Length: 458
Image (cartoon, rainbow, N blue to C red; front, side):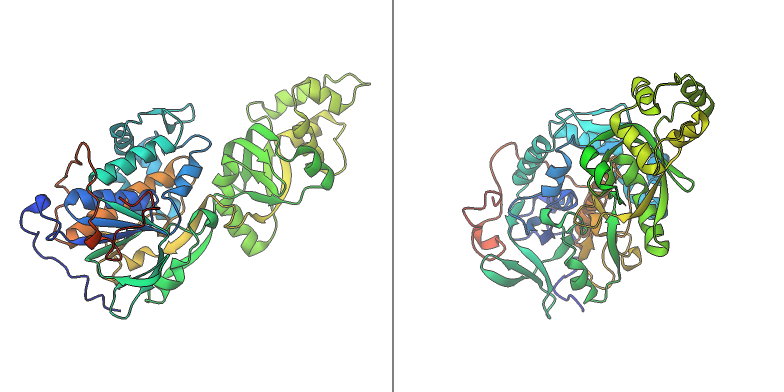
């Protein structure tokens, strides 16, 4: 489909970033997560009029959910090591991360009044440990830049004319825009807003979409009824998980369906691919990664003859859930031999049948193929349409890499859209100190003022 109305402005509008509302190009961003908000930020600062459409009742729900346990905004490791975390997509993602590296994101948070700090793991967190203060300050900044957020509006694809189709509370309507940024997320945690419905709509336009699959999700293990009843929700501290040549270290939690936690998420893509192709696979867990097999064997050899291994292990510092896990892995009770028991502690085998589905996954792998995009993240088949965030076909682990990529690609898409319109993305417009400069009713998405009940419409 040829989007004829996405007219490419070959020269900047007169006056640069100080142009009037009537002269400024009109841009829509669909999706009010971090990628969409940052794309809107970049476009507004370049001088465009911007409306963000969000199909939930409030913006950035998944971002807020991510902050419930302490918002891990990015990571402090070296840039080359950081980029390598994106695996097969590292070379493609690298230019966007280099253009907006972790330190730039930390500086941005500080500008919003939320300084960051580096945790013991190297992960970076806001000082408040929460997402909500950062989001409030960000929304206020967007308000000062004149950005309007309109909620309860779904992306419905494109009309025959090429106009953007949306479904709002009053039904479907079309909207002509000068440029469009899609930041609709993947398909994980759909109740928070990312349901992946956009894949079929872009696919209908001939855009190649790689299958959306769960990433950073829990490992599915068929526990015995007794183990599940006794230990569901119990943590296992400082373990090392191994699958093939891959390892991951950290805390894990026993769930009704298996195991969750950072190390599990780090291996989940590998577990997903192997179980899909070959069926159940073995995941090994080392409950004492800092103690050698020889040292552990010597300690276990000191067990008094009349004392059971279970009581001895409890006195040696093993938790009930760890002992239960060893029994679960062994299947026929704890071995009496000290060397065999030490080997089990260092390498307890667990059978993984798969990974948790999209409804429980932290993120999504798959999405819009990078072959469909130019260097500015514009769809080659749909000129004037840009894509950002988790819609893109990359797979990133937890630890700050997901959010960093969302911000970096959101910025790239926003700047790309600004260049497409002939605006200078580097000509920054500082937001006013006070007052709201949202779109007037005649410029609002339906040609009328947003609903008064919509507190995010300015």
